[in-house]
Length: 176
Image (cartoon, rainbow, N blue to C red; front, side, top):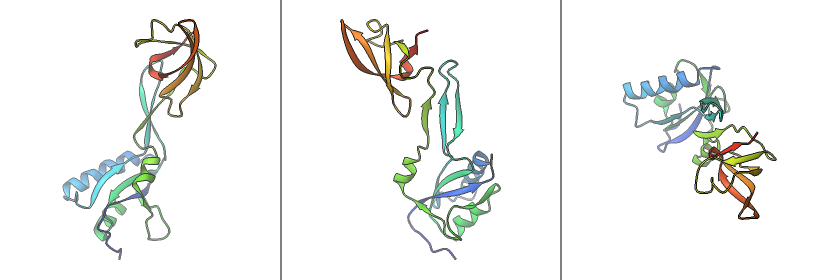
């Protein structure tokens, strides 16, 4: 028998490959139908959203294929519900003891982050497409790109001086 844990914690469940979203949806329905909101609080599939800069289309990629995160109060009932959901192979952890993740660990996993794929790289010439500086910066060189691809440092000539500026990557486009 599992020892009742009265505070909710994050747990990782392993699923069949390609079943991540199905497991999450099924668990959400079970929680709603059986009124288990007091035991199972959140179900997350670790994905990143990648934006194609040319088409602007957004697609999801699994950060950790075959894994789903569940914030729940662990007891016999909640364990049984999760463990017996179609597509779940089990909890991650040694033997019958699921590993608990802290909120900080879950946050560091980057769940629900958006990472844009960029059409340029450091050293490429770019121009600013919108904003207050767009009229003044027509030619710049990419110096650095942030790890999440949301910010870009460029060197540009502004009022006759070479200046390093940090810009929103979505407002920058490559110059051919």
